[in-house]
Image 1 (cartoon, rainbow, N blue to C red):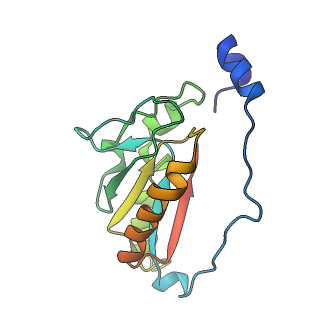
Image 2: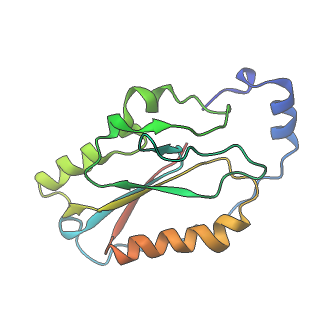
Length: 159
């Protein structure tokens, strides 16, 4: 995350005046199967995707689309096109597992700590300042994909 001093004057003024929303209580559902049997997926807001896919766009209110990341993807192949200047993407660019920890999950599956890695994982752009399209359209669709894949547990890697 960028520090306030890294932002332009215009960005600092915008963040100071923005009315951030909160969700209370935070939705939570405990896993219905033991972790060693669970299919585990990843959802990130780092705006990463496979090379050649449509980049995330800088649009008013935020790009509410998502990209599917197959479970066998090498995280080092992912590219970052999150358009916000308000976070330091160097960690994600140095180690793709920071945003999409598929290597770590595959290692956990091989040691039988988890059951398996989900076949489809999801990447969103963070910094969505007008979230209603995300909440009403994209999030239910994305949740449906994960449910269709039999995902029991999701690891969220926010930025």
